[in-house]
Length: 220
Image (cartoon, rainbow, N blue to C red; front, top):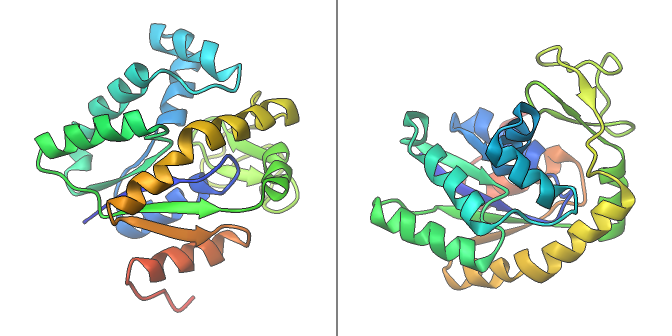
C-alpha cells in the first residue's frame, strides 16, 4: 500500500511518472488537472469556474481543489493507496489535506519532488501532446505515438493543450515558484520529502523514485 504525492514544476514529468507508479503499485492516479479538464470539456459548473483560472495560467481556488480531492479520496479504489498529482499546490491546501487525512486515519508515505531546469521544461511543455480519452502524455520528438495523432493505449485523439504555450507556461512557472515551491520546505519539515532529478528519461526518473522508496528496481 502506497500513498504518494507528486510535486514539481510544469513539464517535470509528473504525469508520466504517475502512470508508471500506478501501474507498478496498482493504486489510482488522482490528477486534479485531469479531473478539472474533464469537467471543462463536459461544461459542468465546476468546469466553467475552473476554466477561468486555467486559461490565465493560474491555480484554481483552494475550495475547488479540495472539494475535488475529498470526493475522489472517498471512492473505494483509494482504500489501498493513491497517488496525488497536482494537489496540494499551496501550503494552505497541504494543511487542509493533512487535516482531512488525519481525521480519517490516513498518512502520506512520501512526497516526491521532481526538479529540472526551466529551459528544459519549457521545451518539453511546448512539444507535449495529450490523449483526450485516457490522458496519456506524449512529446512530438522525445516520445511520439506510433501513429501520429492516435494514442498507443486507447486509440483516442492526441491534442495540444491550450495552456501548453510559451506565454502561459512562463506564467505557470512563476505561479509554481511563488505558490507551490514553499511546499518543498513544508514536506521536508514533515520528514516525507524525496527529491529526484527529472532532467533525464522517464525510465531514469522511475528508477530513482523506486530506489528512493527503498524498493528494488525491475531488471528491465
